Amino acid sequence: MNPTATKLIDVCEQLLCEIDSIDELTARRLATRAGTTPSSVSYHFGSQEQLVIATAERVYKRLNAERLSQLNAAAQHASPNPPALEDIIAALIGPSVRWSLEPGSRYPVLSHFTAMAQRGGNPELYRHVIEGIEHHRVFMPYFRLLAPWLSEAEIGWRMSCALGIRSQVTRSRLRNEVLTNHTIDFSNAGEVIDHIVAVVAPMFRKPA
Image (cartoon, rainbow, N blue to C red; front, side, top):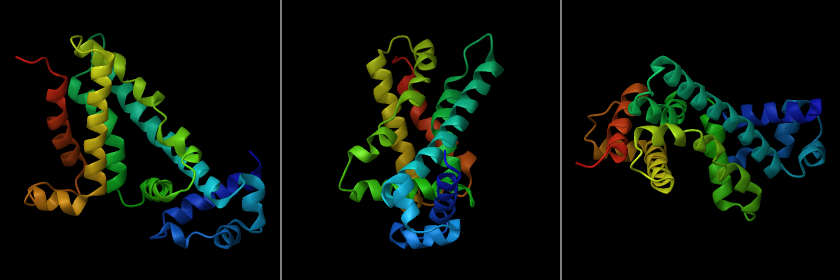
């Protein structure tokens, strides 16, 4: 990638972590921080919107790399036996929960990207990022191994439900605190992940 384009993505990532609203991001602000001209945003990316998408895609890749690293670590630790069901689920939902709670993480980039996608006029621009599932498919063989009575579609549905629970937890902290009578410490990522895993794991266990 062109050095200027890379610099613009770096700056866009920094600014998305600093601002409160996506409306605060402007081509002029990006260019000033990157030491270039506002027109360079359109020249290298086509639009500011596409620059944000490219930035979010890079951050998503880092998040997914952490997710797969945790999955591989669980598999290696348990070898030659299958990894524990709880460890697989923790790898699937844990990194994003941890990012959402850790000060200084790049999670705001993903939050602003989601907000922009929800109000964007061209869903096709976002589809390859939002609907990308190849990193999720990596988990399926492990779930099939531990829950052979479930079809691939049934496992996919349960994974989707697990990711939905994760999303609600990461986006609605105040509501979650009220609903749980403040019995869960939502500043403690490990505790939150353990509670989600405890809810999700029975979905993959064989019915009595």
